[in-house]
Length: 111
Image 1 (cartoon, rainbow, N blue to C red):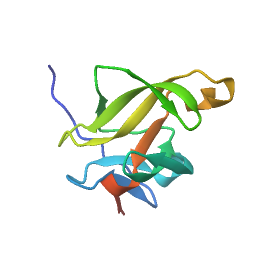
Image 2 (image 1 turned 180 degrees about the vertical axis):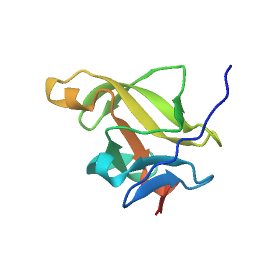
Image 3 (image 1 turned 60 degrees about the vertical axis):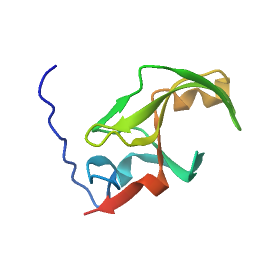
């Protein structure tokens, strides 16, 4: 296993892990603010950093249909922050594949 390097982001609004303050993404990477996670409101991001996925994939039936997801965790404190969409089974949901849900309650905004 190699060395881990923390990625630091620049931007008007940088979203970080509320527990350890590791940078995760920026406001420019938000695709939607209208999602719901396990604990309430969530954001759909096109790209995130400083996270790692669970090895196990899960098939879940959500309000928008069936999806295969991988839970994602903070690289630095291991807090589960949301999930990555691996596969969407409905054609109109394919845009989510490879995108990330981060739970608002687990985030903080830094400058």
